Length: 180
Image 1 (cartoon, rainbow, N blue to C red):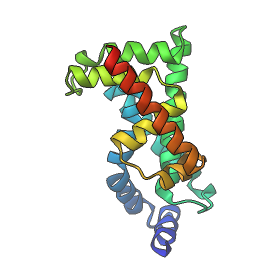
Image 2 (cartoon, helix red, strand yellow):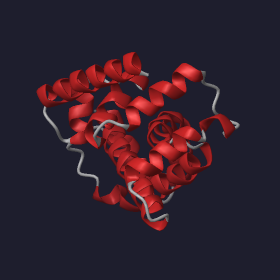
Image 3 (cartoon, one colour):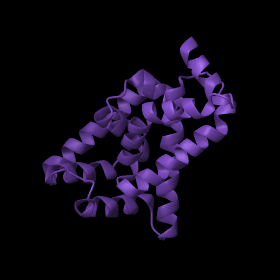
Image 4 (cartoon, helix red, strand yellow):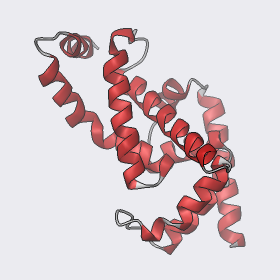
C-alpha cells in the first residue's frame, strides 16, 4: 500500500508526473480498455471512453482519498464513463440504452476489431438483455475474472449482492442460449 501512496505522490508532483503518468498508462490502459470495451462493445467508442477516463483520472487524482486501491478507483471511473457514454449515445439517437446496445451487438460482425464467433455474438445478445447491474457484474466476473471483493470496492455493493446478481445473470443467459 505504501508503494501505491508513493506512486500517487509521483503522479501529483509536477517534477515526476510525466514519467509516473506514462507508467500509469502502461500498467492500466489494457485492463481499463477491456472493461470499457465490454460495456460499449465498439473499439472506436472504447478508445474514446478510455481517453476520457484517463483525462478524468488525471484531473481528479488530487481528490483520491485512498479509501480503495487506485485501480479500483480508476475502474469505477472507467465503468461510469462507459455507462454515461452509452446513455448519451442512446439519447442522441432517440432510443433506449438497451436498444442501442442491441444495435451495437448486431453490428459486431462489421467491427474490424471483433474476432468472436457466432456463439460469442449470441452470448453478447443474451448479455444485452440483462438489467444494467447484472450486465456489469457478469462482464466483470466472466470476461475480466474480477474477484467479488474487488467488484464490491468498484461498484459499492456487497459481495453477497454481487454473487446473487451474477447467479441470476448466468441463469438468464443460459435460458436465452437454450431458447435461441
